[in-house]
Length: 94
Image (cartoon, one colour):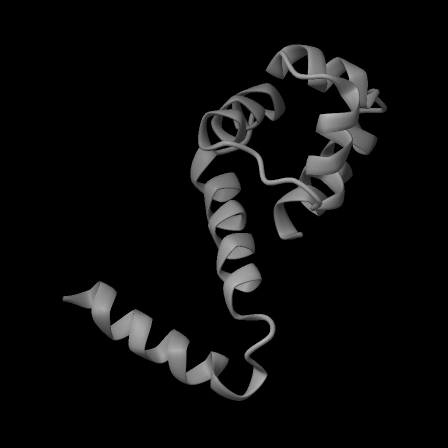
């Protein structure tokens, strides 16, 4: 929920409503709310659009978005998560 927390924080700092961001993404407010709460994953293009709206480097948002996906995949594997991440890092360096 790293991505959701970040966009909520930025939205609140701007004192703007969820419906304003939902409209910019062309989705309904309940769906945007679910993205902020981490109940629904934003699409990659939505992440990039939000980065543009918030005037943030898209890589920062994409990193949080990908981290959320990784956490979701391994959060129930406490004993093996660290080892899996090490293997993944080695694989990605190839």
